[in-house]
Image (cartoon, rainbow, N blue to C red; front, side, top):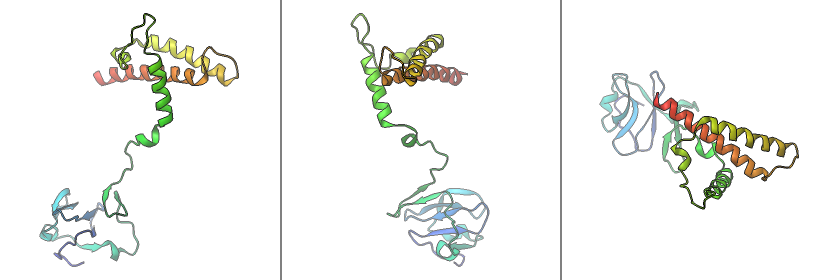
Length: 181
């Protein structure tokens, strides 16, 4: 592509400059790329190619199959987003069936011996880590017994949820400490 040629809506352009960056013009008059001063920008005025006057551009079609869209995901619809590489994948890290079983467990343990119902987030007010540790060991011991085929007072899912509660609670307390420092 020649210098100062107009950008075409929907086309991606590769800058012949380090770092490699793809500039995309989506029709809103701004794009992402490297300015003529060499700075990475997410708001280049793509309707004025003069901003790119000292940079040689080539269309992706002219790159002979090289992957120049580093960091960019383009969907079949034409929509694009930055790469999700390195981002937290809550959908992949968490299991809806585990969270549901845990919520059922937590809800079933809201009722106190005196008949009162505690708030679902009552545990977040703070429980000493020593209390979590002692309870964690009791639940771990029951999970271990379940694993070995030995009888416990509760079923295996309840024992696992109890262990998860204590691990989560202790982690919650630790993160509060770390975030307050």
